[in-house]
Length: 241
Image (tube, rainbow, N blue to C red; front, side, top):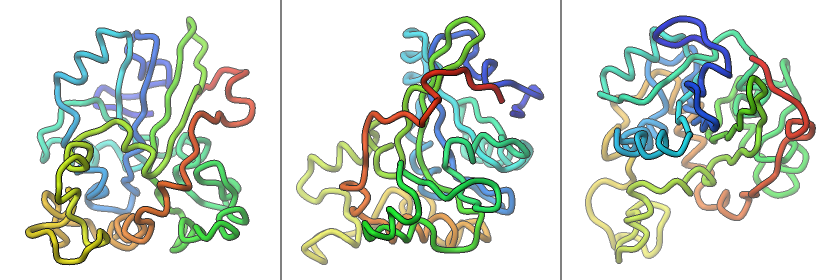
């Protein structure tokens, strides 16, 4: 990895703590800006949350494939304070199945292969020109210098961490997104992404490769989410990047 202070290993990302949470922030190396939906979620990572996690031996970081200079520029423009690293040039995103490129690794997302997604009606995950960036978060445990991958969740599964969506879900108007029924019951900007990151501010490739995919997924992914699984072999051996 590469961070603001130079090269870093997966172990370094823990910052000496026992647990690590990695947000897979969609930011293709060819994009000028990060994914609008990921950016909306990143707005909801306050300093207080980081401090509470730190007090419980847990570090939260974001990781993207974009080069570190582009990451740093995007981060500074939003005023974010969480650690954010570049995985540009390594296999981390492919190993965790959040970048789909069949020339590098088999097409797997959310614990299903391309064929399984096609049968389930969720083959749209693989639509578009590869490599494709996908959302998710991964969780790691450190025992000395050994690192273990304990859990990953993808797409809508990452919403379990809360934020404004979970407050809105308790209100009469809900998330106020165009997909919700009945039509026309909500006023104003739909969705956290559009409120903060309207279409005119998106990067050159983000609409087709990232934001567009998220729109197509809708709520289908909620029933497609699987919890608690671990990638074969990762619970039994250390990971080194």
